[in-house]
Amino acid sequence: MSPTDPTSEGTRSRLQELVRRSLDEAARGGATQAEAAVSLDTGLSVTVRLGEVETLEYQRDRGMGITVYVGKRKGSASTADLSWPAVAETVTKALSIARFTAEDECSGLADAALMAREVPDLELAHAWDIDAERAIELARRAESAALAVDPRIRNSEGGSVSSHAGARVYGNTHGFLGAYPYTTHSISCVVLGQQDDGMQRDYWYSTAREASALESPEEIGRRAGRRTVDRLGARKLGTRKAPVLFAAEMARGLVGHFLGAVRGGPQYRKSSFLCGAAGQQLFPSWVGMVERPHLKRALGSAPFDNEGVATRDRALVDGGVLTGYVLDSYSARKLGLATTGNAGGVHNLEVGGTGEDFEGILRRLDTGLLVTELLGQGVNLVTGDYSRGAAGYWVERGSIAYPVHEVTIAGNLRDMYRGLVAVGADVDIRGGVRTGSILVEQMTIAGD
Image 1 (cartoon, rainbow, N blue to C red):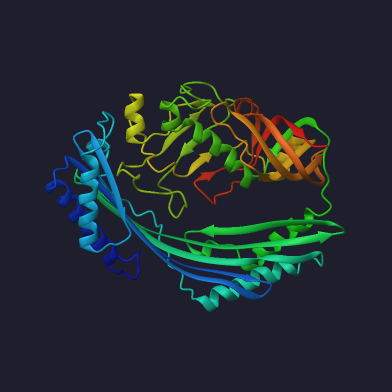
Image 2: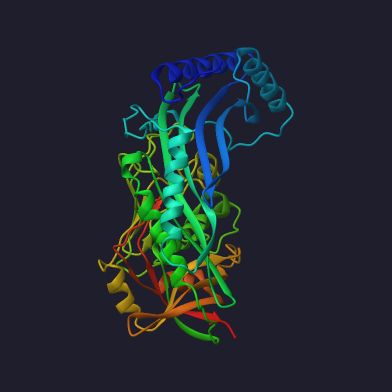
């Protein structure tokens, strides 16, 4: 099977038929329940460095995963070969594995009543008529714009352009069989600047479902160049406690740690600093977080989750209170709860703001650290302890005073969440979490 356009209706029909046949094969082999998912992705990626083509890649990735349940025994197998003989052999392997695994009372498909009854068109697929020559031209334009910002920009890690199109098909023996196409396009640029003996690098990128929503290559390059130049002459700080403002692109990670702590796995394993926190006031009363999976053209949208469960709007945090967890069917059963339709993660989690633009948030910060880069993995989701390398800018009286590097910011996530002062209106929509800049009342900044 070698479909050319994964977003075409014909390709999706063939993939759906393959899933349907695999489920029938599993039932004939003795499976009491079964599910199968196929993903198909094609793409073009180009990187230009100092005007010369450094990489040019065409991708065609495919894969099929099959999970069978024989009573409460589970077996899974996968294949990158979508020919029917290979798929049939994969089903056989999954059945063989299931017969040797231990019983698990929580295993099985998500409840049939929760399956998506309709698959709305969320307008996630927008083809970009671009070839390698055009992609190289756009990458060169981005890099050229960055290099032209300032003579202190001495080197480049490149301008890049990528375009990917794909399809996802999922079915199970409840009779659910759903499919949807998607596209993701992006332009990015990374450059390096030098002043005296100091060197800094920075970047910018734009990504969207449709190419017309991307920022221009020139704007991406200019922003990458300006961000790099602004960091030249960076200083260290003495150790102190001060307010910390996470720029919007960094604030997404701060919300991500919260999501990691309220997922079902850490909850039932009791390995989360927010274990059993549903119903607790974790944030100030003005904080709300709402999942909106059906936003058209959004990067985090999906009509159903990885188990076929219908996705829906949901307030995860209301008035600062955690209303529940982020669950798939297995973790939900382990906790004695119902799945929240989050097999595979959250979909467009919107973090409510306090209304200020970025300049307004800086004024609220007054004097403290603006973080634009984070380094390292020093986050312990069992204890909530947070310690990461950081770079950014020291802010005085609401205005950026000078760039900062080689510092560490530290605190405990529980205290940081309780100490939120503001969430800006400068929302970054380039991912599944949509948030503006986040101002934390106080953290320890370790430097000289």
